[in-house]
Length: 211
Image 1 (cartoon, rainbow, N blue to C red):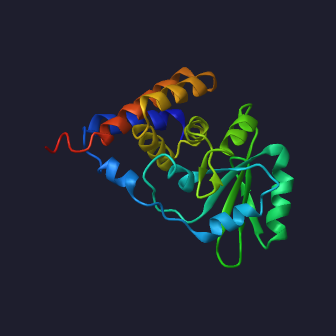
Image 2: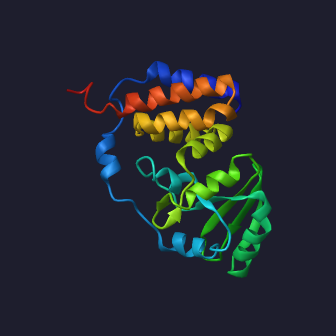
């Protein structure tokens, strides 16, 4: 989605959104996260390659879990060949290349994984910080950098993820997101970020409009 389309999408959501229009966020956040054994088994194959989870599994670290089965992870571009070799050595077959930079892999049993190669100046720092930011023993990209990735992609599901993650965040966490992303976003992107925060907070005001 280009910037003009994203702006139209976010503006439409802002006009239609009402406080408390979402589900009970506190209840959803308290629900036990679903985990699949093969997720951790796959990432164990990459123990020699610094990596971090992104995509739907990573979102569950910061917001209510949405249904997902595949894995999406990032590695620094200079580690791409090592990651590919590790996956191939354990039975994963490369399916093709990703338009955003990376490769997609699948095992004969159907399990699929996308590996995104990061070239951004913040990549090494983000992946290093992820090693202490775990979900199910899996390193998850810290929220500010996950927001940067999802704003860059700007698919409908990405914008919804950003809004819900930021809606569930504390003010302290939001300040950190703003601080980290400020130097990497254009003025228009920063405005979109603030609007997505407002949308997320409106959704999170569960019960107020229903009481």
